[in-house]
Length: 74
Image (cartoon, rainbow, N blue to C red; front, side, top):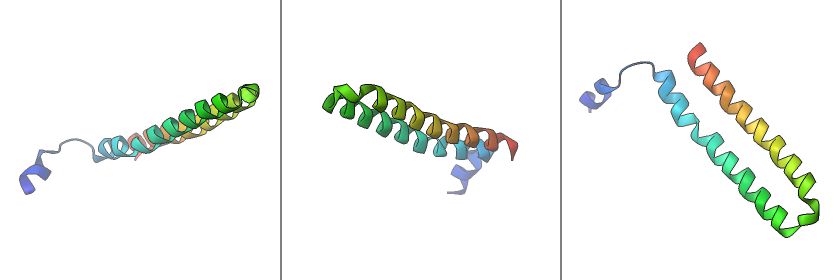
């Protein structure tokens, strides 16, 4: 057990960010997956759906970038 913990070198912040990056990855997948389904169901609303989909993507991606910056700032 202790040999495994001793094998991890470097900043634990980068390991934490790597684990935390899973959340935005899943969120982006859900946003675009549901957006494609919504456009397939109502093609006439594609413009509005695409706009909201990209806005949601920007918010989720901003959270990931803030986590990236904080991983190196702390």
